[in-house]
Length: 237
Image (cartoon, rainbow, N blue to C red):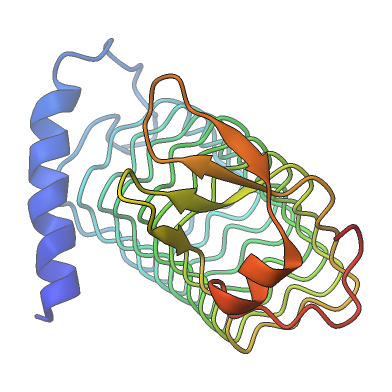
């Protein structure tokens, strides 16, 4: 078991305990548990199922078929979703902290209000997915396909976009860098990312303080020097 997987399991246990105070979820039906910690559901066929509000913290859903499933408000913290099919899934208001979605298929999935900080989406196929106005800080998108995706208004500081296909993606108003109290600047890493046709209108650098946060327009110079971004063919900056 690698270090990353161990850290996910530890996080899952902690979040499972925290979730005990959450409102009870209804039964998912057909023998599918509404609440389960560390369950093995790898390869399960759950296509189109109504799974609203289920809590499957730390469970194994590797290669599961969740295409067009309704996962709104579900707690999938620390879940293994590697190679899972989530195309067209309703993932609004989910808890996905520490979830491993390496090489998952996400095209058409809806992420409104979802908590996905620290998620691993490296090698994922997510063409055109909408991840606007949410906290995506500290996530990994390395070598994934997010062409035409929308990150508009989201907080993306500290994300790994190295080698990612971001052609035509929309980053309008997104926070891509943070300024620490000591003046240091920490940005998402876009080294080797394809940003041709991407929209960067109004991208921001903000103070790292959660309260009374101050933001300013992000310059092309900072993006090149601190985010390692190749701005060839981008729009709005």
